[in-house]
Amino acid sequence: MSRSIPRVALHGAALAAALSGLALLLLACGYSPPRAAWAFFEGAFGDVRALTLTLLKATPLLWTGLGVALAFRVGVWNIGAEGQFYVGALAATWVGTSFELGFLHPLAAMAAGALAGLAWGGLAAVLKIRFGVSEILSTIMLNFIAIDLVGYVVHGPLKEVIGSYPRSERLLPSARLVRIFDGNRLHLGVLLALAAALLLYILLRWTRTGFRLRAVGCNPEAAEVAGISPGRQMLLGLALSGALAGAGGASEVQGVTGRLYERFSAGYGYTAIAVALLGGLHPGGVVLASLFFGSLEAGAGHMQRFAGTPSVMVTLVQGLVLLYLLATGLSRPVDARAREPG
Image 1: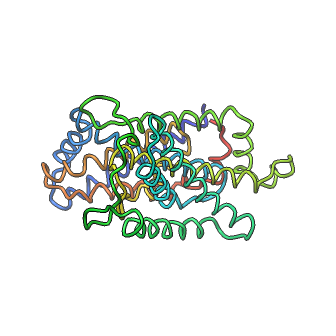
Image 2 (image 1 turned 180 degrees about the horizontal axis):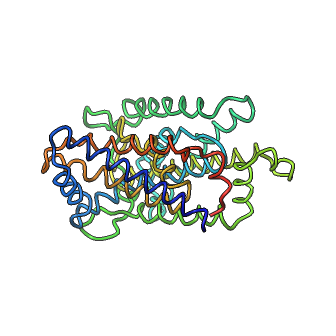
Image 3 (image 1 turned 60 degrees about the horizontal axis):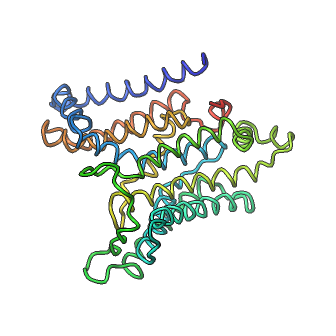
């Protein structure tokens, strides 16, 4: 417990430093930081509608952030959550528009998205283990392939029959994730993401599989001496990481957009890296970090409309947080982070 206190303090300091830097920048540009802060708070948490928007923005970041955190805990750099998010959305769209499966339809579409992400992440692991290809390079390149693949299918095989826009048909109603409350946009994917965070914590903290994954992330040579196969654990870690990101893509299509279209992600897979690092690679920390970054997305527009502050200013917070993490060494996920079980 004592070892976790300095880490929590440093991550809190990262947020404080980023927000202080933003306040100084706003002041230098002639804007009022208090007015901007109040407008941001109203847009992110001011009422039920604002809070709903924050949770909807946080959900894909939670899915992808969990995936990135898991890969980093195993000692591999998964920079491909964006591509895994895309292929997950593509698979869910195909199942959601091509079949009628009754009450099993939402789960089938979600499972298809997770399996597609799993395959996409597993491919990067195979390239690393079998051919020695850096996972950084392969996952980045797989991002471009996934994005272009989605662009191809929404212009071709999955393009809506009526209409000229590059987008798919709407998902069948039976494939959509149900709303948690009547008259509210919150969908079942929000609860499923929280459940995934809990299950990931249990996996890493209380199971033999989780111990093996963490052992390889801590020291692959020592793990191999102990009879644990680093290659097998890296394959499992990257595959499960991709499955989480793929499920996030499915959740976004089934719960929010209702259809797939070109460039439909707001960079969730890339922001997930900041979410995972700010969350300390801990599932609970990732939940809080995704909520923070989701609130940034939700409050940005309101801040621009009512305080006159450019919405892109909140993007600077993400960059400043990452810079602070880099400067303090908290962004090295392959060493000390993997050693801590909780």
